[in-house]
Amino acid sequence: MKIQYENLIIRQAETADAKSLAAWWNDGAVMAHAGFPNGLGTTEEEVIEGHSNGRMVIEESGRLIGECNYRNVEDGIAEIGIKICETDCQNRGVGRKVLSMLIGWLFRNGCSRIILDTNLTNTRAQHVYEALGFRKVRTNIDSWKDQLGRLQSSVDYELVEPDFNSYI
Image (cartoon, rainbow, N blue to C red; front, side, top):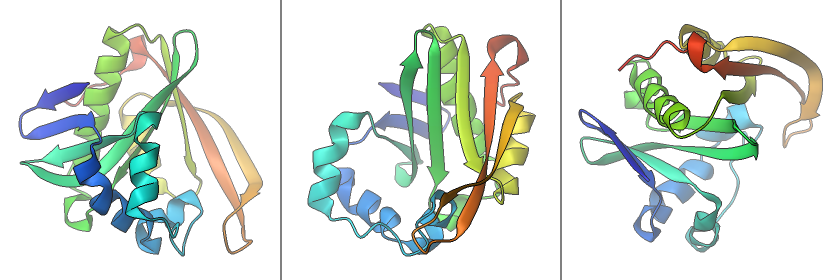
């Protein structure tokens, strides 16, 4: 899969991407929202072994800036995830465009509903999801613990095609 819009590309992760992915996954600042404030402690080799899980990377003007993924959870329903990992690429609307690219592609390829979840404290992401048309389905208070044992809460979202507001 390769999706392109202007200078942005979403493509399957390759072996050459393992170094960047491992660096991001080991960076607690990047991974804190996912429950890993100390990072994952993974190796490039472990990243390479996991490429078969459908991991995709995000490029802006030829530079790796983040990652995203999707998985089919039921017929017509996909769950997605995204991280813009390079801090200089955050708060510029890149995530909104990348999500528009991925979501549009999923709807064009048979999805009827897209779901995701985010940490309740990640209000920046919630703002983006809601601008794209996602609807809050549920808030899960103190539903999981991060790697430091602190209780965390999450928000579940869903999007159907008629509600989708694309930013591309």
